[in-house]
Image 1 (cartoon, protein in one colour):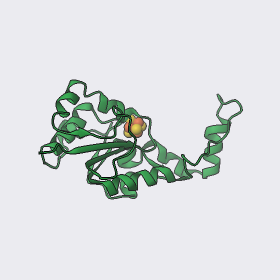
Image 2 (cartoon, rainbow, N blue to C red):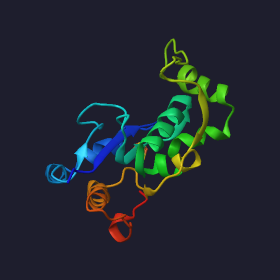
Image 3 (cartoon, protein in one colour):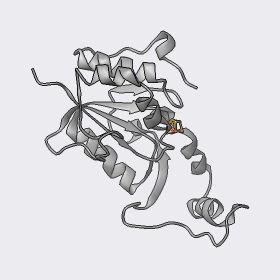
Image 4 (cartoon, rainbow, N blue to C red):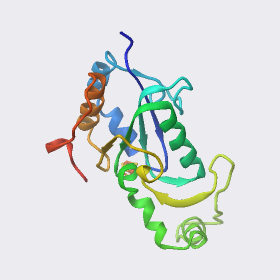
Length: 179
Ligand code: SF4
């Protein structure tokens, strides 16, 4: 039987969740006997393959139009969508800027910070346009949420292993942490 395919992708975050995934260390090797990782920090492929995957994992907040397109693409291309980390599950620290005018927030972050010299607000087609920061489930349907900032490597292993074994993971006890 073919191994279930798993793809990861990142929205607006700090990459701490990806580091936690890599922190599985030798358990990652064990997991790779059961799953095929298509796009992830190890393969350095950014997006899920067009033919789709069994499990899609997204980290980070939906923070701009590019993030939103990436979230929609992953939703379309996977059977189970996992929101990994507080940014994806709740919106995280990025949502703090929703309390401020967008232009003011961008100016404060990129131009006015005390340590900035000749700052400028970044803009490119790749970044897209900033939008109100949202958790993943405010944009697409999420099947499994793993809170934590970041979630522990053991919890990420538990979730991926359960899915690899054909079970829908239920997070409880030590696997359900919010810090
Ligand atoms: Fe970084 Fe925490 Fe957000 Fe993960 S949940 S991307 S570790 S800030």
